[in-house]
Length: 208
Image (cartoon, rainbow, N blue to C red; front, side, top):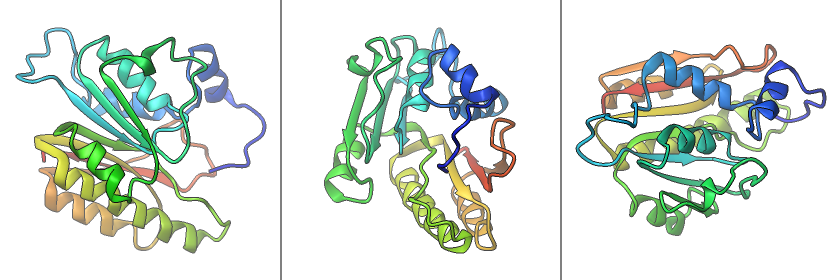
């Protein structure tokens, strides 16, 4: 959501800790609660842990993941907009990171991302361009969430996880129902760092 002008506690904290957006604390809280990213030192992964970040700009979720990886694992990301390079200190230029700028619904973008899988985690903080009409915005959000879910269905390894943002509305539980059909567990979670007047929440799939 846009239109917030005055930095709040989370925005100032993100700047102080070297992240381009406050959204990093949403991912951090979900990671800590649901163990979405493993301990990369001695994690016992048979293959490198691979993550797909859909709707990555300005890059806080990708940056958090790369810092957690500490040179191990692999992250692929995509967005219509470029990533901010203000805080990455070269991480976005590393060999274990791939970024493509474009529409995640386009076949060429899908091919580029899927060819670098399969993934252990598919995550998305993507939101549609908002109109101010809550019904329209919610429906657009659900369409976007379904796109992310298709990536998860195609690209996740058995046992993999999913995070997807949705705008809450009458039809939003449909997405959670779909997630519960694909995963051992599907949960709804609203991080503390979400703005009080925001109608976003996150659906999490565990155990593909």
